[in-house]
Length: 175
Image 1 (cartoon, rainbow, N blue to C red):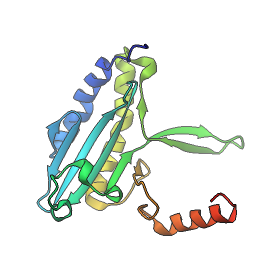
Image 2: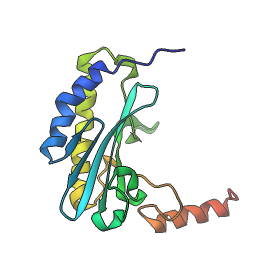
Image 3: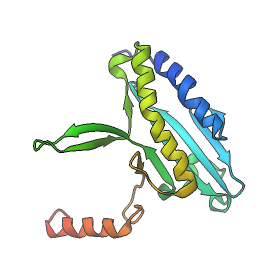
């Protein structure tokens, strides 16, 4: 069985760079989940390590106190449409020379687990996404650094777009 990649350097960088910013924003908790009570809503931030190591993702969610009902306020109890994931923007170029950002929802460090400088650079790359997540809690506006989290037709942030995608798939015979 393959050995799980070491998390020592990435966890050190997370503790030194990400976690202080989360605490500074008023969140309490410990790795890997923090929460903040605004008086009317609960907000959550989670750093999720990959099951087999080598990468992590950052997500957030919120819910009004009323929306939790009898449930304990947790990230898992929030609605899918009230969740967001930090996206890693990787610059790529088309064959015609036009640049675009490839968006992935994880930050991979599997190839430099022991390199402290590279781990710190990866966390610094994640920080703008954390800032976008903090803005999203206040404004509910998705920046380019964030992606939606939804699981069913009709739960997407833009139902009209989802309807058009479904119609196009039907016309192409994909259903």
